[in-house]
Image (cartoon, rainbow, N blue to C red):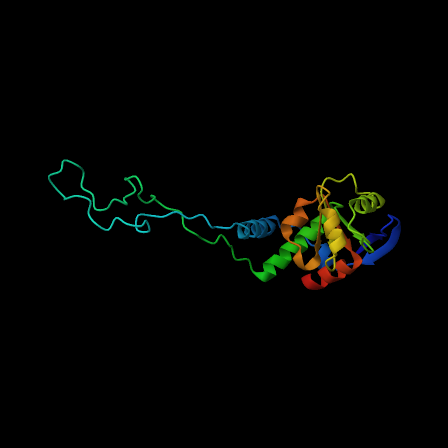
Amino acid sequence: MDLPVIQADGNPSGTVAVDETVFGVPFKEPLVHQVVTAYLAGGRAGTSAQKNRSRVRGGGRKPFRQKGTGSARAGTIRSPLWRGGGTIFAASTRSYAQKVNRKAYRVALRSILSELVRQDRLRLCDAIELDEPRTRLLIALLKQLDIVDKRRIFLVTADHHESLALACRNVVGVNTSEVAHIDPVSLIDHDTVILTSAALKKLESSLL
């Protein structure tokens, strides 16, 4: 299949042939949901922790004798029922990571890219570069590409461009990434995804 390509000034630059096994597959919603859920779960820190009765310092001696005091029996002052004691059902550090097979992950990315093409949310550009990390230069570029009215824009390049990354930080809803660091959530979350020609070849070869 062929996809149209535009230049940085917004003028058409012909078409490019792409593999239908990457950009023309059916949308597999259950698999995409699984991959997105696993990606978001992997971003959780899982550092919440509390001390149960065995981890609280002290409390090794029985506070008073078992019988004859008129009080309920107690074996330690670090019981969760006592002030300064441990926590009942204390939280502990854990990992929220979910395993996703590499093959399934690639299938999900192909499904997302194909759906972006069908929804006309994926565009191809010859090159996206900025000589200086200036926000006004980025805004002018987006106007030339006729996407400045889009709420969320994702610019994908083959390699990291420092000037482009710095310029995107000052524009709300505009983000950039290199092909090696793209993720399913970023592809779904943006209204328009723009791939450079070099990024397209790199991404296509990694998903075949």
